[in-house]
Length: 166
Image 1 (cartoon, rainbow, N blue to C red):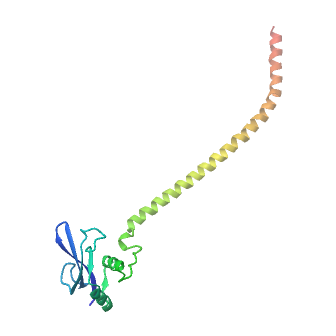
Image 2: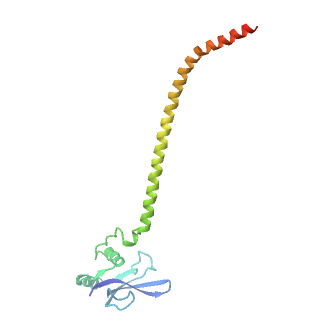
Image 3: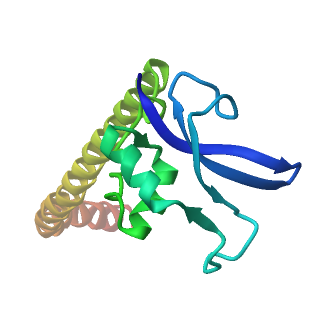
């Protein structure tokens, strides 16, 4: 028989009061129990001595017999130095995303990676476009230097025609 040291709720609506009981783990929370070993009253301040009251001798007995406290009771017992504080579970099944959620997350990651790749391509094109105008400008400067030499004969021809007509 698996024994648990746990809280059993009592009290009125919106006025909870708990009994610390030793019970078979298969029994309901407020159902049949083996022994009542204390009480917990969440309505009093945290530093009040009646907030968590327990019969330490009986609690040690049941812990020695093999009863395991629930997480909440283990926290209270660790405050009294009777039990080691329970380790907080890292991740439960409910915390894990389901298959459809994982698929959507992967799709979002793929879209983000595609956008980043596009941004890199655009940045590379802009960088090459900035280099290209510099090359074109140097080519234009070179042609500008040659242009006056070429234009001179044309201007002379036009001037000669104008003289001939006059």
